[in-house]
Image 1: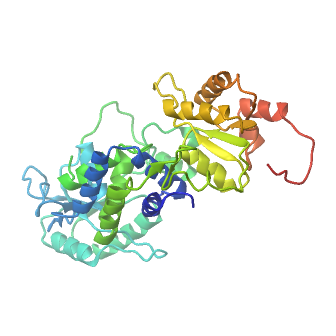
Image 2: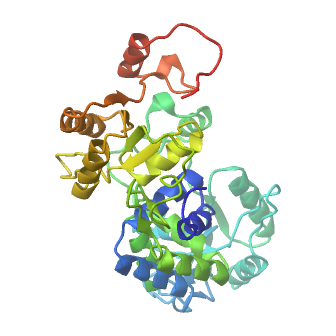
Image 3: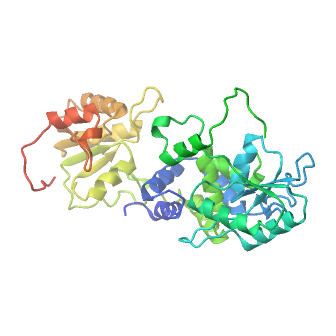
Length: 205
Length: 205
């Protein structure tokens, strides 16, 4: 390669990032090269300390800076409703809608037999513990509608079958802004199957 | 936002990167969070030192670690042929083909009247200087085939019109692996206009 060693090293380190190949890594490295040293130092420092002070919430198991976290200690939230997600980022996506008022539980992964991943054992143990406390009446399985998510839902439904809780799943259907023409058959079939009576107002959660 | 401050800071810094929005920055930050501290420290250090020891080659003006650079001092290369590129990365792309045996000149930018960019003044001055030395017989304008590239080519063709050199441009046509069906009209028109007699062997530069 023709790049000086310092750039080459940076390109190699950036090539590991998710969906970043050598070309994108090169682009990022050349972009960084054009930034003022102050920005590079800021970024360098941010990387060095990003893990410091982070904890896993003892209740919901999300990555946060205090345990129990601000959601688990918020007494405005419905303690009877529990939303199960795979990762902290899924929790944040739902939280950003501003429409879910219950509590969360982060599994820490989904079942994938090819990549040999699974929800963390402590995540599952804590989930059973929370549900067996008897306070929760509904568990919303908010996992991705893909093979891994489906497998994990099936596993969880069996794991939780002995508890008197209502198990629900996120609705399947057309996403906002979708075009019927390009929707896949599966999505369209779900959208038809779950069709609803027309009403012009939003329902609340 | 619901992220701890350290993650939030990292997301903000990553959002500046080319074609990286808040969602991708978030994804990168969460990926980084899962990496061992050793990787983060390596990356942190690589960012801190990436600019150290880099120089601009006094002849071709590319970013490198020695001046004059390894290309300019290579006496196997044809000193009569000069390839003009916008940025160091373009030089590397051409060099990676292994087929150009002349010398390079990096302009350090192209003309864009909206973003108010232009080749660096010293880049242009040095180009005129190199050409007026009389050793160069052909100048290949290897700029992107877009508005900025075309504008810059026009400017350069006027700037260099007083010198007795052959000015050439990279060929326009279908890229390897293209499908006629999806080629844009302009590309297809160029491909037709520049059609060549069929021959099955590669030509060398």
